[in-house]
Image (cartoon, rainbow over all chains, first blue to last red; front, side):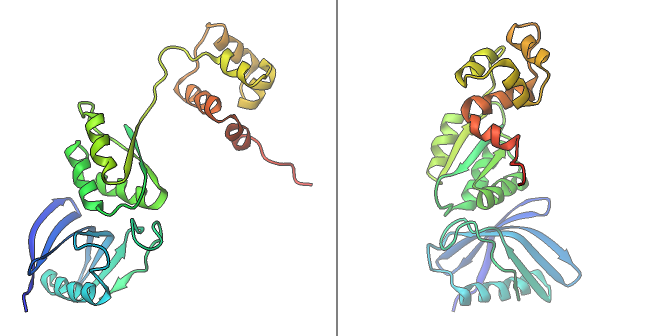
Length: 98
Length: 142
């Protein structure tokens, strides 16, 4: 089972774009990163790259748990930006806590 | 400054952030622009003057974003013509805009010219007079 890994980062202050790989799969994520103690908040989070309906809740959870370890935090909160595509564009998704 | 308008699903929001960065916008600002596009459907965006807007518009169109550039009025707007198109008297037009009749007359006769904000308001009026009327008045509660 291949592992996730960070392939690249682009950083501008607290805003980060990261490229995540898992085998042949590749995602790009972008967010404003706010760390508070042992907690990290990814605000206005965007994700692209794996194609429609390829990143479900289980995959996102696995990725988030891995990212939590990588970032060395006990809690990872993801506040998605308003949806840009898919179901209900413009809707603000609920905050996910891992 | 340009205005971006969402023309469909933004399937590649990070490509959009990167393309705006190539146009001279910081990544953080580009992120805010994309967030506003997702939220409101449009956003203003500061791009460098040297940017080829036609090329940018062509590339952003592939990302379902329409590029609109700010229209700056050349010279003095033809206030009298704008008013006449709506068949308004000077008094009616001045009252609608909430300005002094004398000010309007000075504009129409070229003694003074409206500032940028007033010119913008008149451009909106020329484009959508009903919107201006509705925005600047409200129904009397009965």
